[in-house]
Amino acid sequence: MIRFEDVAKQYQDDTFAVKSLNLEVKKGEFFVLIGPSGSGKTTTLKMINRLIPLTDGTIYIADKRISDYDINELRWNIGYVLQQIALFPHMTIEENIAVVPELIKWDKERIKNRVTELLDMVGLDPSIYRKRKPKELSGGEQQRIGVIRALAADPEIILMDEPFSALDPITREKLQDDILALQRKINKTIVFVTHDMKEALKLGDRICVMKNGKMEQVGTPEELLDQPANDFILNFVGEGKKLHNERVKLEKIAKPYGDDIKIENLADSIPETATIKSILERLATEEQLPVEKNGEIIGVINREILIQYLSDQLNERGQAHE
Image (cartoon, rainbow, N blue to C red; front, side):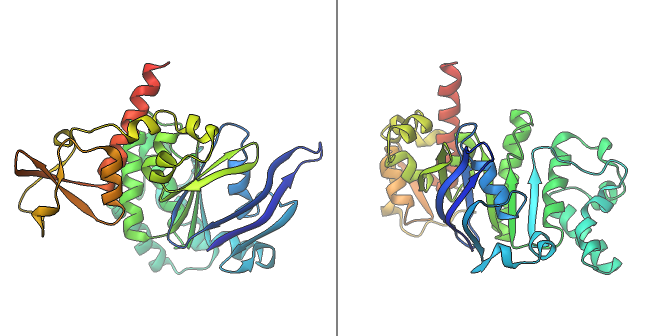
């Protein structure tokens, strides 16, 4: 869907923000760019929609060079969500969401229906929120509007530049859950920038770790935890490697086993005190695993539950070292 071929960005003082980047983001993938400050992750993101021009190399979208797209055509098909939400304060929420659909000449009825659909999608009652102004919304509500405004014209690609980093931890975690649930419905190609490994592990189908403008490793959360490419990755992931071989008391995190959960083969259960490594190996090929304790099934675990557990543990250990 998005392909970087030998992409570089060099500034007039001869410093490189990005060096010789070769990378492919798959269609429908939630792809995370992460790295320390100055690693080039935001520059990489902004080159996709030509907010920052390339110095060398080529970026393709759907096998067409971005330089061959009309700039408006390109950006209308790419939603963009910033840390600074930048809603227009004098406009209603409906008017904010409608900006791009109006630019591309959607009719009023279609826009109205789209606003209703999007507000419903993120749990904001259209009859209440449609005519409100941004100042009447909480930070979390404003960020939800920022997300759905980026979705308004149904673009194929969404770019998100640290969209949740200015929010309090509780609101941030809720919006992370919301964006995961939303992605399951809309299946867009999302490129997401963060400096928070906990967030990256929770959200990313794949994660690209950058340092000094170069790609250090690309892989799934499990691959980064299990097979760090070098000491930088190992240290950046932090306690993830240690966690990987720990045993987990799954009883505390498993989803309770009830009538709404169908388990076809109870013999394929995993013990309640399994290691992270063994759970990940199973979840690589299975949607969910029955959890067994004392000969009985006590619940199920899936990839999302395990990644959330790993993220929480990384966060707790990081705080303990502060």
